[in-house]
Amino acid sequence: MTKPQRVYLAGPEVFFPELEHRRIVASKKRLLAAYGLEGVDPLDTQLEATGSESPQALGFRIYRANRELMESCQAIIANLSPFRGLSADPGTVFEVGYMIAQGKSAIGYTMDPRNYYERAGSTPTDKLGHTVENFGLSDNLMIECGIVEAGGEIVRGHGSSNEPFFDEAVFERCVRALTKRHA
Image (cartoon, rainbow, N blue to C red):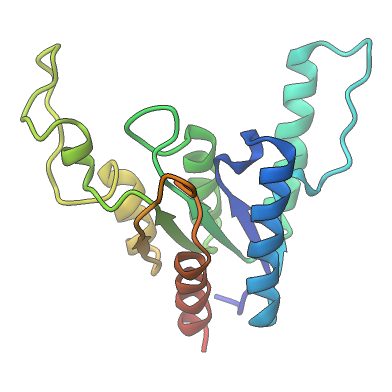
C-alpha cells in the first residue's frame, strides 16, 4: 500500500449548515497539512445545479464527482458518529467500503463512545423482535471489522453538546494512526 498523500474526508458534515461545515473541514485540512497530507472534502467539487436538471440527474453527478475524488485519494478518514439514528451516515459507510475495496487505508472515528448495542437500548431484541447485535463494536460489525481487517482502526471520542460530531484531538488521533501505519 502506498503512503497516502491525499485523504478523503467522509462524514455527515456535508449536510451541516455551510459555516459549520467549512469550519470543521478547515480544521481537518489544517491538521492533515501539519502531517504533510492533503485533505479532500466531498464538497471540493465545482458542481452547480442547472435549472433544467432533475434532482436525480444532479444526484448522479454528485455521486460521480465524489467517486472521482475518492479515486484521487490514497486514504479515507470517516466520521462514523451516529447520524439521524443509531448508526453512521449511510453515504459515509458506502465511501468507507468503496475505499477499502480499492485497497486504500481507512480510519474511522465516532464521537459517541457507546457500543452499538448500548445505543440500541442494551436489549437482545428491538421492539419488533429483531435481534440487536452485541459484539462490543462501535457500529454494525461490517463497518468496524472492515476497517480493522483493512489495517485501520476506529477512534472513539466523547462528543459534547456543543460539538457532537467533531473534536480536533480525536481527529488528530486518526491522522496519527494513518501516518503511523505508513511510517
